[in-house]
Image 1: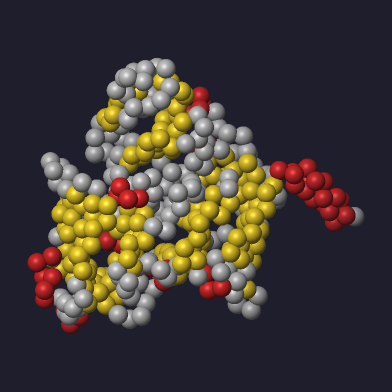
Image 2: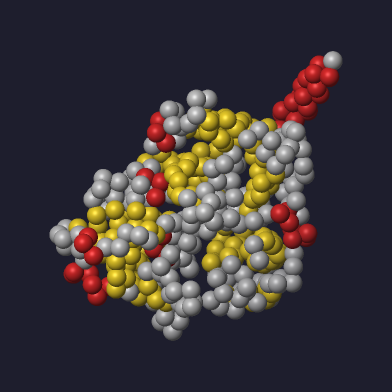
Length: 406
């Protein structure tokens, strides 16, 4: 009798919310051959070959991080100073300290992991000059490809938004010097590069995306690193995990104060693997996500087939957007506000702010800047008349203020 009553309640619950749930099926392909760029509003917006790239460059305006394709088995090692370029040898390579991407932030690529914690201007692969705003490379790295081949790499500089780097075989043959200009990737997060084909790759879509379904190496605890398949969030969204839910599509209400900007907040552990029985879903969990358009979503993973197909199923519910009045704080000063089209609009008191984004009333991002404490104010570009939302991250919380341009 109790089971029958429970069945009725579940059926009634399903009827109550099923019209609001959008179920989506996407696939990374057999062997997880593709990484997927996914938008909660628009579904799958782009895919790219997982094995098509070796390293990637942060092309945000203040970005300087360089990552490796750890999910495909790439391994990075520090060799020595850049002056040792011509004498690099595997015989002298210390492989005891492998450099890996960290996945709680897009700013923590493998090439940054060798930075001096006592020097705020050491970015790992090079040193930032606070006067010239140029990062000058000072190290040589060795990258082992999944094929077992080794390449030596040195990032020469990041100047005026252009990365310059060189790479070659260990013996010095097949040396190339490459430039990657951030302006060629306006509004995007990463530019990708293939060392074997010597190609700069523009994989990221023009359309907005929230999730990157991909393979990567994660620390499972106590520095036990393992290759996983999961979700990395776009740097502009916030999310958090809710557990122990009887019905993950209904239970627990959204709390904006729990939002955080960890890139791997969703990660890989929404599924579990058991020998003999394969994958099962964590069925009492949902994720709340605040997206690029100012909308809040409830996301529940409903299926995962594993490597044989790479198929993934999820259900999502669009909730009411957060009230910007509830998010306003006294951290940011906008002057003048209201403003006219001819005014030079200044954002002040931003030294503790991590990221600023200006969004028009139709949801389009018209300005974005990573701050990282490097300045106390910035000027906005000329804006057309209308209502804008100034969204920023401070103390791992997402805040929004309004700007009116008359």
